[in-house]
Amino acid sequence: MTDRYTRLANGPLKALVKTLGLPSPVPLRRYRDGAYLSEPVLVLGAGAAADAYAQILLDNGFEVRRKPTSEKLSAVLAFFDEAQTPTDLSETALEIGGALRGLVRCSRVVVFSRDAHIAPERPADVDPALNAARSGTLGLMRSLAHEMRGGSTANGIVVSDGVPMDAPSVQGALWFLLSSKSAYVSGQPLHVTTADGEATTAEALAGTHLDGRVAVVTGAARGIGAAIAATLARDGASVVGVDVPQAGDALARTMNEVGGTALQLDITAEDAGRVIAQRVGAPIDIFVHNAGITRDRMLANMESSRWDSVIAVNIDAQLRINAQLTEAGAWGSSPRVVSLASTSGIAGNRGQTNYSASKAGVIGMAAAAADSFAAQGGTINAVAPGFIETEMTATMPTLTREVARRIASLQQGGLPDDVAEAIAFLAAGSSGGISGTTLRVCGQNMVGA
Ligand code: NAD
Image (cartoon, rainbow, N blue to C red; front, side, top):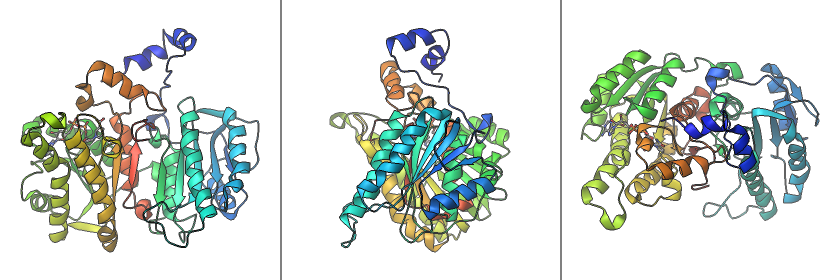
């Protein structure tokens, strides 16, 4: 599906779009254009973590500035991890503001903070002013993301107490957020909750960091699943693509293109997990639960077949497959599981009670299964795409589709590759400290924002 408006707004209609104040989405810089920008990175904040990251960036080949500058910048890193009260936010916040006009197109702001405790999970002894400062940092980051221009993004890295600010997963999250791989991620906090994860570098995370890993991708025949298969294969993984027999030809084509193996299987089959374990025949390092369907109807008109089939494919099959792979001892030594949720599972969506129930279910499953995967040295996370240009969204009514694209801060739909890059990042060895979370890949869509 092509976004004709974005093409026109950046071509023949550019002047008119500007005059009328219409949305002017900027073509995003993606991985094929290079992993990182070359302009200097400004590091703001006076604490030990800011100093450490200035050095880490230098060690990774970035040019670094420690004071506001009039030079063009590719990124601003802002450290709020030592903020004790909301008044501590102002100096660094205003310095970010002063740097924004110097940012080049498709640049990045990354805000570092410690975890705020939000009800109902808060410990009894949390200091209200400290918690306000931490929570306030996220509010700042989310609003800033709405204000970013020129295809640039703002995101947060939120590190739990007790986890070193320079833990491998914090560094891994930084390389992802700084790179073009996070083109369609904006306004999102990435939570690092443990110090686990393999050490990585900016260059390694931009390269074949999944070499030798075995990855299974469901729904791999087309759309987002095909992009995930291609991206994991690009990063070095051996991919097994699963899809229904009716999609056999498309699956074979996709797997031929990526050098993967096709497995025709309906994931709702009672023994799907056992069949996958047996057919893959090797420890599974990465499992991407991507297969999903919509059967939209208002709840008042919902037939049981529509409700049941969506629950069966989108969440029930995932639960059963995970359990059967565990029973079969099929996981590798530090498995990475990533499940496709949706912003509809966060915000709800008219006509999608079944779909939203299934996708909110995925978010709940990832949160609850994190501990059992941690016991195997692994992680499980969800990725919630917003509006992505695929055959699924191509069937939307024209006006609904156009609105869905423009209500994101980046004013456009994402591409399957954007979702795939987030999954490849969560599949990386360095992401071991990120588990039980949901990462939105939605261009900061207002839905559920
Ligand atoms: P798609 O319809 O283009 O592709 C889905 C694939 O899953 C198809 O190849 C299909 O044959 C396969 N599949 C369906 N049922 C299956 C089953 N029982 N067993 C095996 N394979 C099965 O969808 P897409 O747009 O690429 O979406 C992929 C995932 O991303 C889905 O989980 C979807 O809910 C989620 N998602 C998509 C969007 C979007 O904007 N496209 C937004 C949010 C979430």
